[in-house]
Image (cartoon, rainbow, N blue to C red; front, side, top):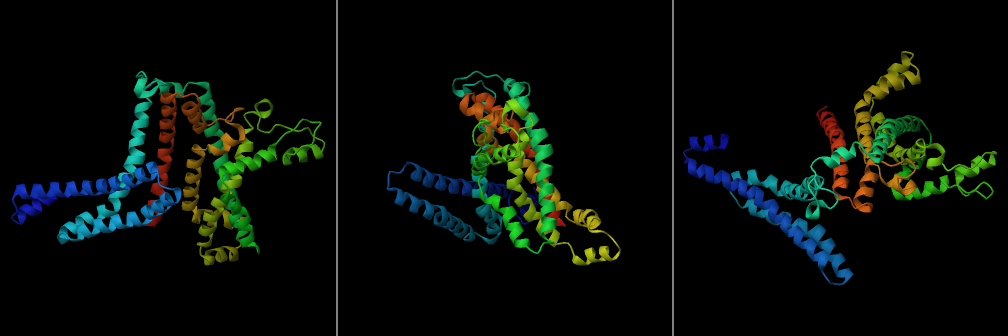
Length: 378
């Protein structure tokens, strides 16, 4: 409306003003569509081409780096050839448009399709029967899913997340006071270089159990036997379920504590040294300084790290699948989704689980984004 009023004030007819507005909208849509079409054609060539692998590899590199750069340059050149007013209006779409088109195609549309599939039975929309919200009712009533919700909420959110955050904070505070700060931080951060699958294999060896009359190759059971105890199947259902989930949590804490430590260490170094020195001169102990000065000063970072780890624990999959195959009472939402979708071939039920997991993650993501904006504004 503002554009129409401005043009009317300048003497332009309503028809020409409306035509210009429609042209702007058309160009804003056309530019990302063309960019996305060209990118898709390159992808199809790489996927279906019969050229030697070396040629396909070099083409992929050239297309992924040079092709996209040339594409942006061409579009930018076209827009800059327009009148200055149109250049200012359309140029943002040159950079944002293709990215938005890719996000819509690979994220938004698959989400809508997944929800559509969840409204059908195990055979999906192609050959299945429409069941409405029946799959969602099953998600919140079947025993396997209730067990998965219990594990995700109680063990991974209420136990794993606080332990990971507190461990990273304590390690960061202690390492900053150490004479071997770089070495200590490097050792703590080192597990971040290991994939979750690799970490699961490593800890499988640590938790390995053999019959009591044989040599224990698992590190934990070897220590137990050395002190006169009996070897235990630490992650097995028959012994300590559901508390065997705690042994899986140890792996994630081992992996993620380094991530928390790095962020907390950077935040702690940003606290003015004058404030800490003034507190010491007033007689505050180191523990009081930590609780009443350091923690309030980095509360924004604590919230951000907590929400980030929380999102990760909601989606936990790799460690559980490698360690136990989601058996022995260790299943979580993501493993149940995988099992229903790719093992049981129940398309509708698996899609419903995926949508429920997405809905669970979205509020945490929104809160995390708001925290980022508040920190930037501050």
